[in-house]
Image 1 (cartoon, helix red, strand yellow):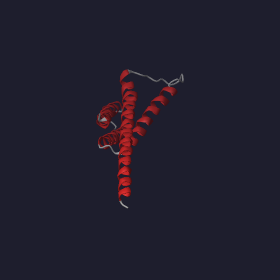
Image 2 (spheres, rainbow, N blue to C red):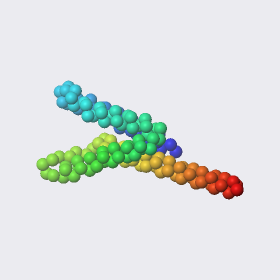
Image 3 (cartoon, one colour):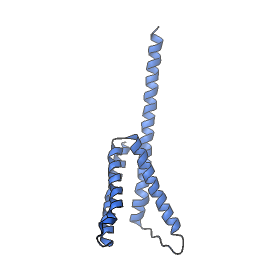
Length: 140
């Protein structure tokens, strides 16, 4: 199965959710475009990573795992801070889907793609070694 294709689709979906959230923030903040800079930069990063993950770039797979891990850590931190009586933290189904479900799925899919890649390179490396050993034995 092409895990990187599904990870690509989920990263694009996550970026699209980010654009919708950025537009909602723009409306709530009185139309001030200064509030769009960081969310749109995050969306551009997700779209860029999505394209590179689809091409199975190793560093992009690792970067996607790190970025999604940071998103999950942010969710955990937000909920831990929400345990304080002065701060309220609301969890709903859409929030859990976009801040927990999608990142966990992307991490799992990218990790599987990396594992398949390393397995192939190990297999390919052992074939190369056998060929080289065979050539050395035939050489004298």
